Structures are given as C-alpha cells and as structure tokens.
Length: 220
Image 1 (cartoon, rainbow, N blue to C red):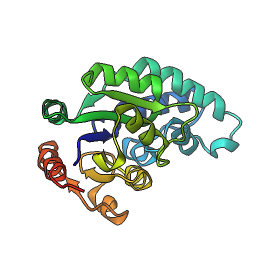
Image 2 (image 1 turned 180 degrees about the vertical axis):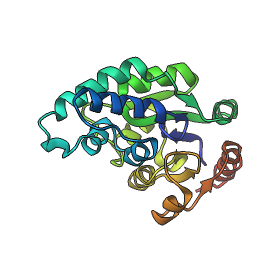
Image 3 (image 1 turned 90 degrees about the vertical axis):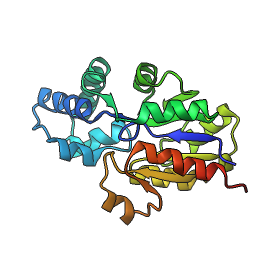
Image 4 (image 1 turned 135 degrees about the horizontal axis):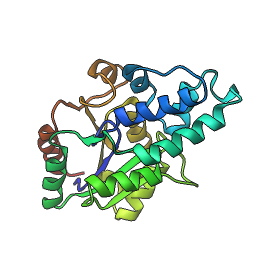
C-alpha cells in the first residue's frame, strides 16, 4: 500500500523558472555573454545547477570563464531565488490534504541543497524531508537521493510514489523502482513527456488526490 510521495521541486511544486532565468542571465551578461529567453532556459533545466550552466555558457566546461560564471550564478541565485518563485496553484492545498490523510512527503531536487532547504521552509514547512544536491549522493536520475530520502522516512520503495515534471523525473522513478506520476504544468510539454514514456499524467493538482488514493488502495 502506498503511503509516501517523493516530490520533485522545480516545475512540480514550485515555479522557479523566472528566478533561474534571471540568475543565469545575470551571470552570463556579467562575464560578457548573451542572455537567453525563458523558453531556452526552460529546456536546459532538470539536471542541477552545474549542468544548467554547462548548457548556458558558450562551449560549456571548455570555456575558460565557466567556473567564474558558475560562481556568479550561485552567489546571485542565493540572494534572488525567491524574488519571483511561487507555488503552483493548488499544490500547497493538495500537499496539506495528503498530510492530513497520513501520507509521508519528501521533496528531492537536483537544486543546491541550501536553496532547497530555504525554499522548502518558505513554502512547504510541513513536509517531512527536503533534500537537495548533497556530497556523496549522485544527482537524479541516479536513485541515490530518492533512496536516501526513503531511508530517512522509513519507507520501502514499494510504498512510495514519485511525482515530477520532466524526463529526468521519469528516469529517476524508474531507476529508483518507484511508480511515477508526471505533471503537465511544469517545464516539459505533455507531448514530450509521452515521447519519453510517461504513462500517468495529471493536468491539475487536484487530480493527484484521486490518482494517489487509487494507488494507495492497491495492495502488493
């Protein structure tokens, strides 16, 4: 029986796109590079800050200014991560209802752990656990972070459901041995999610309640 939800953060429970775009572009312009538009940044997200900057900085790691750009991004984002970031409409209510129903909940993100802790505390202080990029744990889609969260929650993988918005999340769920629910309001289009194998896709947060309730009633 399902009793735990592992949530992705960016594009799933929080719309962080504008602050990420502003931070990337601040770093790029500061070091003499051209900025990107919102759609271009959106396509780069999902694999953590370092990969984001590898994609954003011309020639990536081969660029001699890469490390400086990454540092500038990190410093700027720490100060501006919550300027425009907001929860997706309906998500806080759904998460609170799940808590009332007895579900355990964790947020697991490839974002810097310091940012994950700050944003989770600001918007979702009632979740049982928030975990960001951590030394010794491989980033998603590796199962390491999910398994670490499950261990801390005292949950078996058969009891957990993963909820995310991207192909990275689908791969993470598969690698972790978890059922996956994809959301349509995040950083990837439904068409793209279907192409990469999404089977269960919800259009609105309230639909999650029925999907999760149905999963909870399936005994294995």
